[in-house]
Image 1: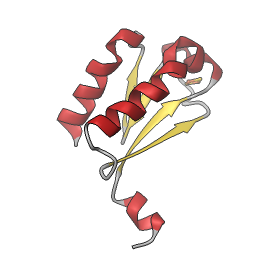
Image 2: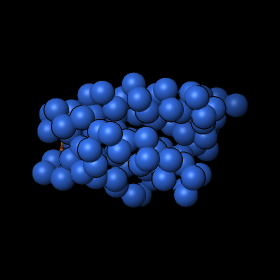
Image 3: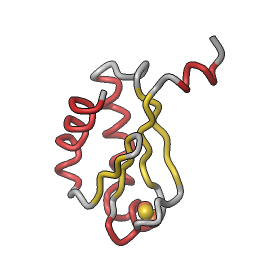
Image 4: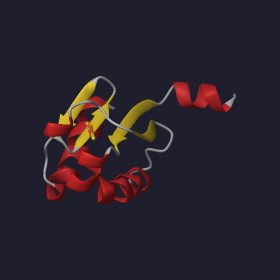
Length: 90
Ligand code: FES
């Protein structure tokens, strides 16, 4: 199976790394999310990547999982948001 096919069957989690979201907590969220995926052994199910802007800067920090945007949560809520995403949608 090629890398492309391996990527295609995964669900996509996107973190906004545009300046507004970056400064509102997504800077630190990158490592937290990477660790979460590793600890929960989700590497085969989730394709995690960054993007430059989701065009909802005023609502940030923003995360997107498939078609759903998770927005405006304080950084100390990130783990709850990840639990919600992965328990509900995976
Ligand atoms: S910087 Fe995140 S939505 Fe624009």
